[in-house]
Length: 143
Ligand code: AMP
Image (tube, rainbow, N blue to C red; front, side, top):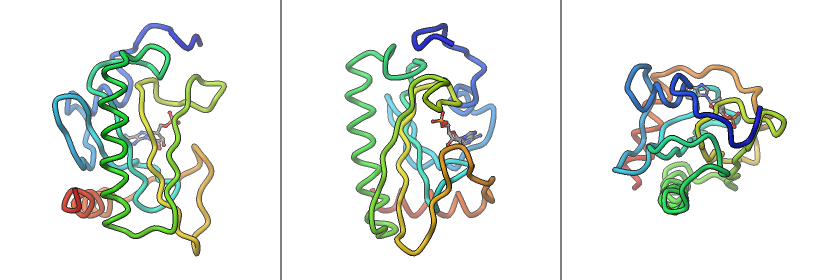
């Protein structure tokens, strides 16, 4: 699968953007959407995506990337304020070989709590939507 292949309108994040499937939304503006990862590697694992379609970093418009990165910083500040983790890991994967599983650009904001073992990328268990919605509300309130 090429890093700059065709964008698939049926990918799961495109469906979330079209409100075809539910998500625990944290924040939304003209350029970005943030919501809770449904299979968190750590509690309060949050995602930030651009609204404009792109598969990954390599086919993203630079202006959109600026908006996404500004959003990542903004949401990461709110996650820090809401949950006081000991650290925050920010990741982004390009291409299947690198571990990317959803082909719509996204950044992971993963709080690290010293007393908890983090799940490996792609190994998280499905989370309860009610729990995710409560976490999303808390992050929104900290924005
Ligand atoms: P990546 O493997 O970097 O492409 O990340 C995709 C992320 O999307 C993973 O962390 C998944 O847990 C997450 N994910 C998959 N399906 C959903 C969904 N329906 N809602 C929220 N997050 C999802």
